[in-house]
Image (cartoon, rainbow, N blue to C red):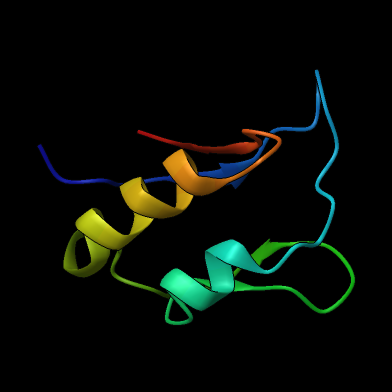
Length: 65
């Protein structure tokens, strides 16, 4: 199933701006001060990298569906 949505969920913890997500998938993630998901990206092209970014996030705030 293709990923159609990616977001930052800080309900339980906060992004610490470590940059791991941007290092793994700069096409989707950017970390100026806090992680942001770039607009207009076809998430289906980067499914593996998005999943790896979420798994590598030390605070587990990257969510996708």
